[in-house]
Image (cartoon, rainbow, N blue to C red; front, top):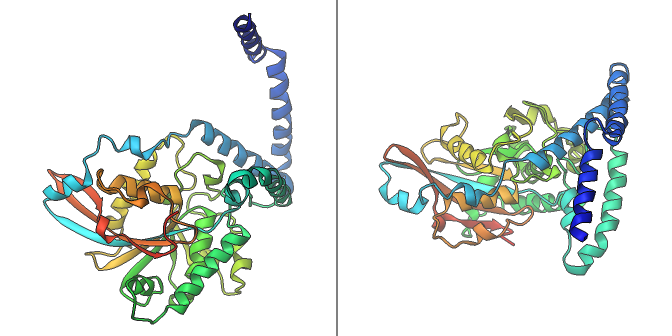
Length: 371
C-alpha cells in the first residue's frame, strides 16, 4: 500500500509538472513575468538592471551546481601514468618553484563551515540569517555574500597577519624558509604573482603582498584555471571575461588611497566563469603547462610562481602530481587559511608524452601548514 501510494503520488506530481499542467504554467508565469518586467525596466533603470543581473547570477550558479562536470580529481587521474614512475623514464627534465597561498576565511566559510560539533550546528541558523540580511544590504550592488564570496572580517585579519609576518621577516638571513619569505617579499630571485579569479583569493594576495606590490609596482595576474574545484555557488566567478569581480571590501581592507584595481590586476588570463561541463583536472593540467610555457612564467628553473588560490584546488593539484604511492598530508588535508606552502614542480617527456611531477622532498611549509 505504501509503495502504491508513493507511485501514485509521484505520478500525480509528474502530471502536475507537465508543460500543459496548471501548476507548470503558474510557476512559469510567476517566474517569467517578473523577469520580463525587470528586463524591460532595465533598459531605463539602473536599479532594475542590477536586480536582473543578480537574478541571472543566481540562476547561473544554481545551474552550475546541478550540472557541473567537475567531479573528483582522483577518478580523473586513474588512467594517467604515475608521476614517480614516469620520472624515472623522462627523456628531459625541467623544473620551477611554486608557492601556494590559500585565501583567508571567506563569508561562505564563516556562515557554513565555522566551528565544529554541536556549536557549529546551533550557530548555523544565526550565521545564515546574518548572511542573508547582509546579502539584502548588497542587493543593489554587484557583490554577494554567497556567490564568489569575499573575505570575511576574520579572513581580512588573517591576510593582514600574513603581511605582518612577511614584513617582519624581511631582510633576515637565518631560518630554513627564509629563502621563500624573501621571494614572497620580492627580495630574492625572479617571481611572478598569479591568482584565482575569485574575490577571496585576489583580496588575500593583494593584502598579504601589499608591501611588495607597493614597492615593485608589479601586476597580479588573474587566471581562470585557478578557480576553485567545487560546484558550490561560492565558487562561481562574478567577473566577466577579461574583467574584475566586484572587490567591494578590498579598498577598505587596504585602507590605502593608492590602490588602483584595474592598474594592479591584469586580467588577460581570466575567461570569467569556468565552463559548466569542464573537469577539474583539465584546469590543473592547463595551469601546470602554463608554469612552463607562459611568456610571463620564470624560465629555466630561475624563478618562482606565487599562486593565490583555494584549498580543494591545491589539494587536487598535489593528488594529481605527487606519486600515486606517496603518502603526504597535502593529499589529505587543506592548507590553512592564509597559509603558504612551497614546492618544486617538474616536467619531462616520456615517449613524447609530457608528464608533470611534484617533488615530494621539496614541499616546505612557510607558514600555517595543513589542517
